Length: 268
Image (cartoon, rainbow, N blue to C red; front, top):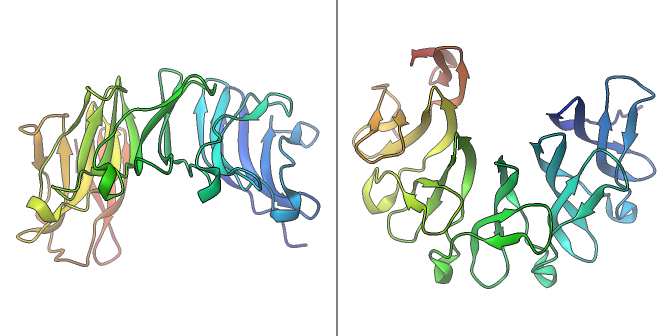
């Protein structure tokens, strides 16, 4: 009578993965081929504690990576190929502190990239091919200050774009080819206070995002991955509280919401 509360719907191959709840196993990972008989539960983890509670589901071919809960290991990275036997925990680090807590999962070239903490270096960018031996930390930036704290990871061709804080420039837009040496800050908007960049969206080889400066308030920016190619697109009357958001690519346009509950269309 309360429903299953399906969420995190993610298409991978010909299947749809999602998180849903039943009265026996709590919130678990499910998969469906679009039929009732083809809708099955993939995990039964820790039902006594509310279930695996999968989040951050990201497609990798016909499989998915996701963040899930284990009573013994905390929140860790999991992978599933759409079968119960093919669903497994990938990481086990930092278990005494609640797990590695993967966040902002994105998949590039078959590997999962995500923010996580091993309990030593703060929250850094990590990479995984779905095996324990193939999982490693990509960045080691600002370890004494909580780490780079990557957020909003998106894939633009052969690069990852995300926001991070190196402890010097505040939260800015960063780019990575998946290696530590190939990870660098793209923009320096707003000085040491940072730009509070968020809502990163890829369209036409460019990344669009919202960022803040004291002079212009929150505006929509675009970037080609270089500092010189990062420019402000809008001049809205936003101030420090009215934030353009919900950026979404739509054909040759970028659609977003802006102050006054209005919908805007930027021709890219």
